[in-house]
Amino acid sequence: MKKRKLNSGGFTLSELLVVVLILSIVMIVVVGGITVVKDSYNSIKLKAESDTLMSTTIAGVMDEMRYAGDIKTEAQTFTDSSGTAKTETVTTFLSGPRGYRIFFSNDSGSKGIMVNSEGVAQSQSAPLMTGKTMTDGLIPSISYTYDEATGLFTATITISHKGAEFAKQTITARPLN
Image 1 (cartoon, helix red, strand yellow):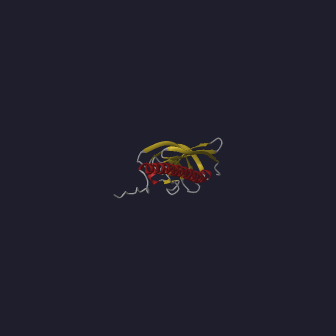
Image 2 (cartoon, one colour):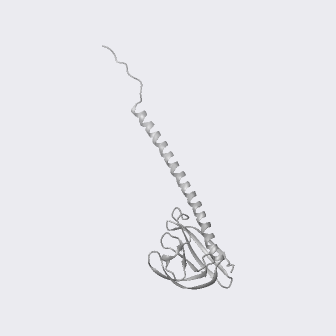
Image 3 (cartoon, helix red, strand yellow):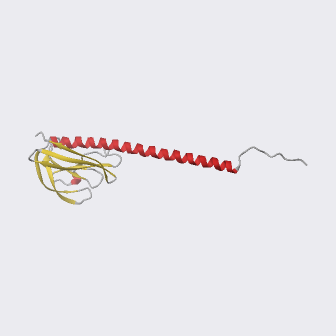
């Protein structure tokens, strides 16, 4: 009878299982690293977009406040984008760049800061920032007052992301008129 030679080539089952285990560990580390890098990139991008939106919003608000004239604080009734009538005490002023009386309000949706004409429904008002400026779900809002004694507007601009406050800055402006 002939004896068969044992073929010593190939891998044993235990060797294959060890290789699969090592590859699995390497893949977990690689995927975890990619996730960390992606989250860091998104966080940095969101912060940069927030800074850009904040500076653009400040520039728009400062332009309106610097050239404001005939400043009055009084109750205004307007309709927001959801169709709800609101009455608020707001500071209205004659806008130098626009040529008519305006006041700022916050849209309950995703339009951000609205520029409202005095006595005109909000549906006819315009957003201060365009949709192209408000990227990645960032929404600006404003609260502002006018101190007649000092002649200064004080405005707090807040940038929100997914309903949570992301950035906040307070500015002051003295009207030139």
